[in-house]
Image 1 (tube, helix red, strand yellow):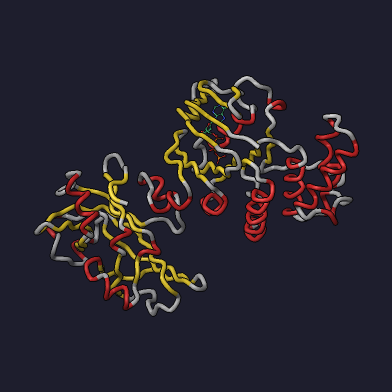
Image 2 (cartoon, rainbow, N blue to C red):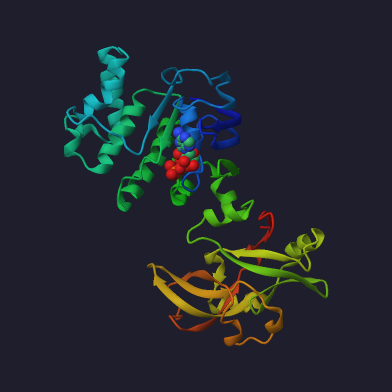
Length: 390
Ligand code: ATP
């Protein structure tokens, strides 16, 4: 297998559009790298540059220390699996998998062995004589994977390979791809805009926006320590809650004021805000839905980060419930501490979500107290949107 190195890679299309800007990434052997980001952020363009299907406008791309910028796609030892994995309809599963090898004039006994091995890995042994029309979506996707596997490439590139499958199959294929990665010990680069796929499959995730890498980190690191507001909002489902807040110091303690509430930050987080001179400044506060609690115990241990909210949405997911409520996203000075519904009628609101245990008695219309986990509060700079406290 292989290691890849991308240094200062740019893609400027003929119309002048900069689709990828200063992309830097080191991929080690056997890593499962995910490119994730919203539509149009440059994921596929980067993948296509690695495959050689798109010219690299600037920068240096190496596989195992060898510069690849001008190497033909067929000589890069890379196999690609696309979202539209068009199989040849008139060929059997076996022939579909063998086709590329036949074109390369691989000896017949070698082709047979490779196809047999791949079909065992992919659990396709019973289906080798079938035509694609007689296969399910997931089985077809596995044949497309098989076509890539038989080539024994140094690197697998996968561009949204599961996006044409229904939800259940996606989950199943996701697990199969993870197992495949283990079995093959392959280096994989996988493009998706689905953050669940990114979190469950990747050993390392590259989060992109507008052609620029925002953060490269393990799934856990991205979830716990997002570098900016974009990453914080993109990774995690339901997404992180945000609200405009003001940083305040009182008797040495640091508070975040928002809506009509004031919550006290733990000493460590407070010290960071003091040291970085955020006292008296506007910031953006964030907290993940699963870090908002409404049970008695949590309320008793977190008395300093409680807020009272009116539930305006309830969704039972099974073992958990999503509770929705609104917070005011501005704090008009004249009504700061004398809350009345009327005074706030025209103020901008944000919707928050709390993910709590299904045993909750809260329902639509309930007014309840919730506590924010004080150690899981994120604070972002309002101008640069960079994380100050994670
Ligand atoms: P998606 O998830 O929608 O596939 P993506 O992140 O893979 O998005 P790319 O396909 O890499 O996005 O495209 C990145 C940007 O480059 C987009 O804004 C797209 O419109 C632009 N782009 C792609 N191909 C060309 C081209 N040939 N000429 C000019 N701009 C292009």
